[in-house]
Amino acid sequence: MRKALSLVSLAALMVATPALAQSNLEKLGQFQTTGVKEFKVVEQGGDYAAGIRENLKRINLPDGFKIELYAVVPDARHMAVGPQGIVTFVGTRKTDVWSVTDRNKDRVADEVKRFAPSIDFSIPNGPCFSEDGFLYIAEQNRVLVYPAAEFFYESPDVAAFEVVPQGKLVPVSEESYNHTARVCKIGPDNKIYISLGQPFNVPAPEKLDLYRQEGIGGIIRLNTDGTGREVYTYGVRNSVGHDFNPANGELWFTDNQVDGMGDDIPPGELNRQTAKGQHFGFPWYGGGDVRTNEYSDSEPPADVVFPAVAMQAHAADLGMDFYEGRQFPAKYRGGIFSAQHGSWNRTTPVGARVMFTAVNEDGSVGETEVFADGWIDENGEYLGRPVDIAELRDGSILVSDDLAGAIYRISYGQ
Image (cartoon, rainbow, N blue to C red; front, side, top):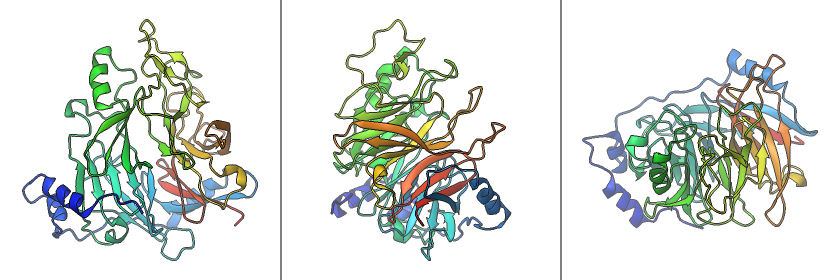
């Protein structure tokens, strides 16, 4: 089994932790208590949960599938299912990370509480696990690692170490309130891949050299101890979902297109990357092969890689997951489930659904279809906004929803 961090590198992280006077993070890195005793706990029953269940009756699925409320999770964004199947960690675009536990294994969460209550988070959107149980959380401008998080989460004090210190993921000058929901994933090379959305609709030309150097508007990778940082992917506007094809290790990712060009252009993107350093067109292209107005007179980079799938414009494609389970019918195995968050400024709302994209044995893309929809009602009102997809050990999938503040479970034949 691959090891995310050796004891030597873990010790190095402990030494590298800045000596902030008696900070809780410093104490946790030295395995000291912080004095924090209380958890925030989320009620799982009552009228609120009943209202969500009522809305789920409207969701359309293929024959044989059903959707149920798995957990009430405020502001639920990206998810990381623990390798032991004990707990699922859920990020937010606010200041909380939630631990979600199904203790009796009835496929409904029994407990949702704040993870690591002694730590102050800032937009901890992106949790991801290594195979051997190290939890990484990519925040707005920091990355922390939590060894054995599935077991430490029961305590308010959780062993934690800096992988990327505060202010070092992107230059502080480029911190923004916009496009700062990071996602991470451990690749087949045992490196951590982190997407860095750039903060503008379309950035000014004078920003491009800095952004290329830092990997802003791209995807970076680094060793799991924080060393060896390099830019892996260029020409991305704001990717909030990526995963690796388990069949061949290729990176696939979603990207959100430029706003303000009209209701029906440019398309959203599902991209396939086959080699390090490929460029996916932004800001010369606003989505697909649609040129941006701001760069229409500027020559695009050579060898731009266009999307494997052009999604409906402004549906806001976010989290994605290659399906590796056996519960669903054979047509879904090895394909991609992806979440569309829904449009925010389109005349008629679109999205708010789960898509499925088949992937062929040679790694090429197959057909894309709607898998689950119904979160936009007949009045154009959002009843929910899907964000991310994650797979449970039984082969069912979880779908997070940051509007309803919920996680749903979709199963087949049960």
